[in-house]
Amino acid sequence: MIKAGIVGGTGYTGVELLRILATHPDVEVSCITSRSEAGMAVADMYTNLRGYYDLSFTEPDVEVLAGCDLVFFATPHGVAMRMAPELLARGVRIVDLSADFRIRDLDVWARWYGMPHETAEWAAKAVYGLPEVAREAIRQAELVANPGCYPTAVQLGFLPLLENRLVRTGHLVADAKSGASGAGRQGKVGMLHGEVGESFKAYGASGHRHLPEIRQGLEQMAAGRVGVSFVPHLVPMIRGIEATLYAELNDPADFDRLQALYEERYRDEPFVDVMPFGSHPETRSVRGENSCRMALHRQEDSPVVIVTSVIDNLVKGAAGQAVQNMNIMFGLDERAGLRVPALLP
Image (cartoon, rainbow, N blue to C red; front, side, top):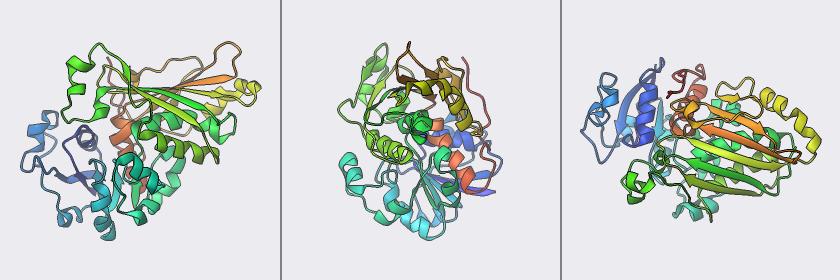
């Protein structure tokens, strides 16, 4: 049985980790930390977990966390890079759900996250945990940087096109939308129901911190420079991300083989579902599920391929993918704890 700890367990990502791990056959959550809620029972804060956990939130303690086999960091940016090195030195493996170890260029990281990076050595060693791309590296990793939610939906949608050098990489477009849970659990006026209900808006259109992460991943897939425009939007729902992606084919004749190409690329991927050509994946079809569901489109004889990609931002976009990475790291069935269908309606 794997002993897991969670640092920063009171946010939406933390409770989603607890929900998924509650029925994981090979994992026991032995500690969960929160500086603000230390002493409170987990089941008192999250009543959906009553009967599943007899744990209380505690102050972060390296000695306690060092007794875990793996620690998840579900913390604000800047926390994991300070705490992780001591745990790693003591043999604890880590999956970090913040952005602390996602971006290789630490000057770029500092510019977008507003602070200097303090752990260059581990930033260089971290494995970017997109299983569909880096599964073998994840198996051996001591530290996995769990991808962001938007970057997961965007990268998986573009992946087969870039791997096979089928599109012009000078100007890819990612038009993405997210539910309000993507902003986290902390109180913000802009996230009140009266502010977001019956409304729809773009944000970060002049630049969003997920842009360098997306660009880094796409350039790795393309083995070269990539130009990408990424614009996120806030929609009045709780969970879900939809990314509509646009790319121009080098040779429009390749369109006839794209559906087969996508189906073959993801045939053995347990958490990617390629729908029939022309389908319209819905965010509700992945609500609570660790899946990325996608479909291909073409308008008339245009050389532009359109990919629509949906995920649950809290599952495949965060906690579910973190558990998927943990399963790979420990040689477990990759689907363990994640074999649940989406919630409908």
